[in-house]
Length: 129
Image 1 (cartoon, rainbow, N blue to C red):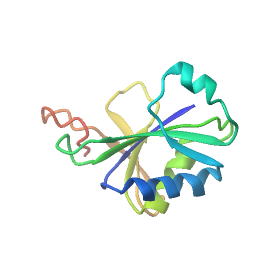
Image 2 (image 1 turned 180 degrees about the vertical axis):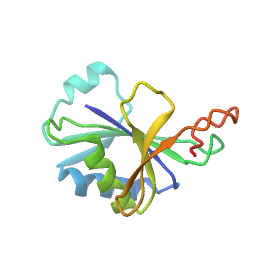
Image 3 (image 1 turned 135 degrees about the horizontal axis):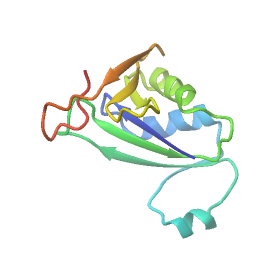
Image 4 (image 1 turned 30 degrees about the vertical axis):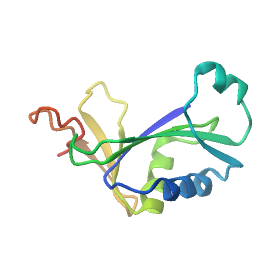
């Protein structure tokens, strides 16, 4: 399963890794730079892979965090709330609606609100109202 989180603040990678360990209670966390074949070969239980993308200059949110996990009972919203609280930041996740510009915003207290991507400003893809 892939979980995509857009983070308001530019948080250090080591802090994000620590948060992933705490939330998933996993054995290993690896920054992924892998192909589909490598993923199959590293098909270990209780291992989490992640990708971290810098969004500086692309709006008012600073990082995109993709987490690849074999969690069958973990939900994106639950993980998002835990990440927002643990990292003390605002996180935006998909609301799974048909509208590609509507999202769910989670604040550092775990409160959720609906938000919309600002489509007026060009080249600022991760600008939210």
